Image 1 (tube, rainbow over the protein chains, first blue to last red):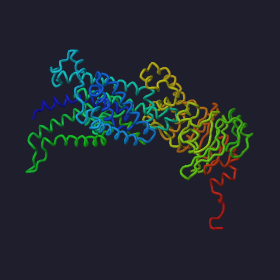
Image 2: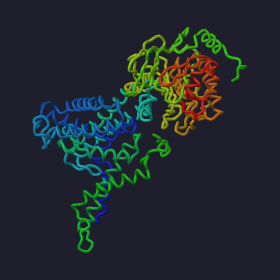
Image 3: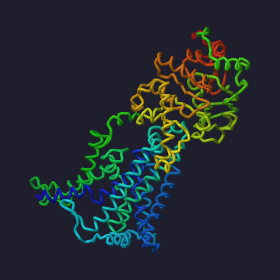
Image 4: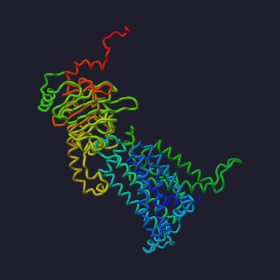
Length: 336
Length: 290
């Protein structure tokens, strides 16, 4: 067994691009769920807004890629309004239902043959990220060269996306931290505790919930952009329901209603995931057998991993509901 | 109860003004702050509230009493726009309240508390208090990003909040989570938080529910204080001793209607009220079925 490879990959998983785009998405979901108590199960839909905003510049509009950033933000604001207007006056569960459905509708629309001209159908969109790569090259990062030190060695291509990705994480982390310290953030946290009390004190709860939903969604949009830029392609099936739930798992792992939690959670999620995945693959190089019965072979490792994630989440909820950086005392007051 | 007690200037003035009023349901008041007219709310086929006319005298403590299911809390919800009446009109401080959203009433000077105390458990006591202040610059997100814009106002709000906490004997709990307060302390916190909105009318929904007798006395004093600082208090309560003790005027509701109004002494002698609470046939033998 090659432990050095397992460790190297796991440590890279900790800071790699998956952790980055999860962290950005989790910062957004944290605004909605952690601070405001809004159950947005459609974060993948917001991520698709960002990815398709970028992709459509090349595929449909034929304009420079950078226009994709305002375009993605516009898409996600519109999506937030569409989901929020009918549901935010109702109980929290309705938002959950609408968001999960809306994200699926988006995925099915963008992969449909009917709208292939706009969204590229199930093939997705490729070849739009050159201008992003060029900026990195202009700054002296050679796309194919190796950078870094063990275990953190990345190609220039990976490194450039990672630098931008972590800058985006830092930016939104700081933004959310500042906002949650402000009176605005106080209103959101109060809404999470009890809407009616906040309304009786003269705050427009509906408007605050809408702002929270849209802010979290716009942050999620940037997550989708980072992912699309890293892959250099936009694929509809990268924005399915499970992405939302893995992001949520990572967020809960880190600890909700904490900016640090929304960053550490995704890092640990991917660090652990990579570790288990690498470890299991090495263990199952020869299928594990009990007598004549094959217990596990390497092709089943992927499925097993996702089962382990589920198990880990259950154990987490039982033994550490506050997450890694949360405050247990706070959890004890959950008398709703 | 204690007729011997000497009343303060505000209480005397409120009682003198109310003495001139008729002791009938819907009586006109010399200086009403809240006027409701023909307010009716139905849930399906059930009429929860059907108030023909009600005026609440400014600067007084008015109690709203009635048996369970009389529509008191629904009436509160209607007056504060938490619920919309099927028909009817009402005004607060001379302004019509129709089509005013519930979150606007606080800025107009009308604030309410809830029957089930709504302390924001995962916020600290001081944050609960700060939340109550209206017109905060930093509550707009673009301002929230720039602490320089709201720090000064925040300091003023905090000073006001601390003064109120001291008055309500909660100063030592300043930085604790509201969730760690006892039931009685939560009632105090909710009342103090409501005062952060600088209200002219304070509507308390069962302020004494679940509060121990010692704390009741201090809550009584706090409610009297509100009037003595010029505020109007309208409260729902079941504790008749307390109603008798602190209110200047009592309104009795039963089955959605106002069945009696008057001073506490009038009300405790009013046969309609006794009927509403004990049933019209009280005193009769249960054995005779004629």
